[in-house]
Amino acid sequence: MSANLSSTSKIIDTILVLDFGSQYTQLIARRVRESSVYSEILPWDIDEKKIKSINPKGIILSGGPDSVTESYTPRIPQIIFDLNVPILGICYGMQTLAEQFGGQVISSEFKEFGYSELKVKTDSILFSNLNKTLNVWMSHGDQVQDLPDNFDLLASSTSAPIAAMQHLTKPIYALQFHPEVTHTDDGKTILDNFIFKICKVNSDWKMDDLIDQRIQEIKDKVQNSKVLLGLSGGVDSSVTAALLNKAIGNKLICVFVDNGLLRKGEPIEVMNTFKENMNLNVIKSDSEDIFLRHLEGIENPEQKRKIIGRTFIDVFDAEANKLKEINFLAQGTIYPDVIESSGSESKEARVIKSHHNVGGLPDEMNMELVEPLRDLFKDEVRKLGVELGLPKEMLNRHPFPGPGLGVRILGEVTKEKTTILKEADYIFIEELIRADLYKMVSQAFAVFLPIKSVGVVGDERRYAEVIGLRAVETVDFMTARWAHLPYDFLEHVSNRIVNEIEQVSRVVYDISSKPPATIEWE
Ligand code: XMP
Image (cartoon, rainbow, N blue to C red; front, side, top):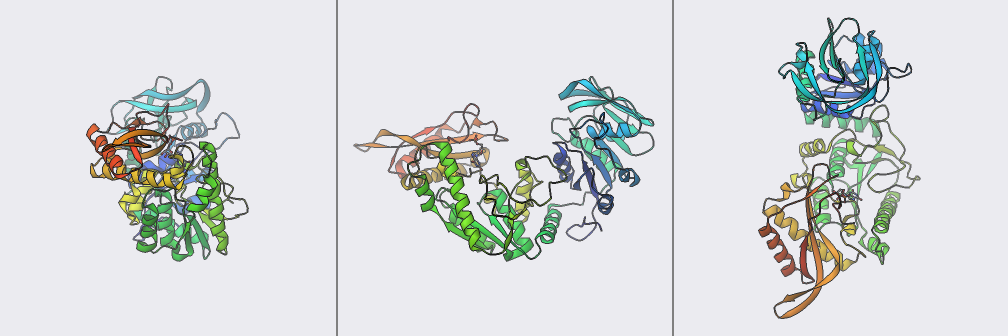
């Protein structure tokens, strides 16, 4: 039976993405979702019944790392053609289409990765409303050398003379380049042309439908069992918690570890949001003392990170052991966290070996994973959070590192330093919000420096702590530019910190970009 029901139980149109292992497969599905059309990814070798049950209105064949010049590599199963719905092959999808229809594919000497100029040669619905010349993104080693029988050439690029093709009588189309990546000019229009003009689907899918679908999947998987979730207050674990709460109510048990290294007010905020307002089953583990004890005398950044990670696991494990009969562990893993390529195993349950956020849970915690956000991107997770009723302030918060203030206090971590840093950080963030600058920067925070400096207050000499302020602008957090915050603003923040925190005599602003610096100081 088709499971593609909207929130109003209407059967909705589906575009099936058949995965041949490309790093961009999830992006194809995401682009389709952006057009409010439901999209499902299945591995290329999934069984026939499953494909039929989805009853797709159109099929997109993804790219993949293999070469159709090798006989053992994946091919499009016959059922895909038997369904008689439009097909769009992308990269490997195009090559295997060409080969299966009698064309010739060769492994070219020059692998092509990057921009290429595409010239559209033949009018086609696929390229409607587009210029005749487009910059497209190529990523391939093989290419179609001879058109298969009954195919027309649609477009060429300098290095790929057959860069797009179309069947003469059937709605089968193929592209050598990747329309799903933003580098391709009008790639979204090409995909929209395929889904709306060729497959004629309705754009009748909403985030609500995804919520309903995920809830059903969670229910089917966990049945009556209890599920444990490590709640950090970050976006991903919060959205996972809200979703699971809708699905299984109080069978979800959240453990929130207050390690004393969180931002000022955060533990209360997290508990208020989830326990008081959302009525979630949250256990708060007050573990500041344990963390501070383990960190005593430790100055090396890597060692501090390891100790914090290990202590987190110990605390979480101890809380989990107090609870009985828990078979599932929920995680807020999102697509960028998924290291392995998407495909056949992406939704399969696996026994836990490691946890990307906390650095490895003990093997003896033999629980199955529930990861309902595993195929979503960060901005989609935020939208889901809004639909689930999470406060916007929580969803739009700057990222916060797992080891927390532990890596923002340079050198040994002590209770006194965490107290000072929390205050300074709070002032900085409060002022950014007031000045409407918070959303303009990607991440901002205060750092406790391991030096003292001389200051003067009234007639008194003050030999006291130095606070660093850091604010960066970035898209992907891999590279970042220091934020050019207004001098007046910085002056105001500096004055407040020095006046309101007795132990601080000086404030400095970090003007290093990444690289060569990193965003965090440790
Ligand atoms: P860096 O300092 O490497 O930080 O430029 C890049 C981004 O990652 C965050 N970060 C972490 N996040 N666990 C996390 O969950 C960590 O151990 C960790 N270290 C850094 C950092 O805040 C920034 O957003």
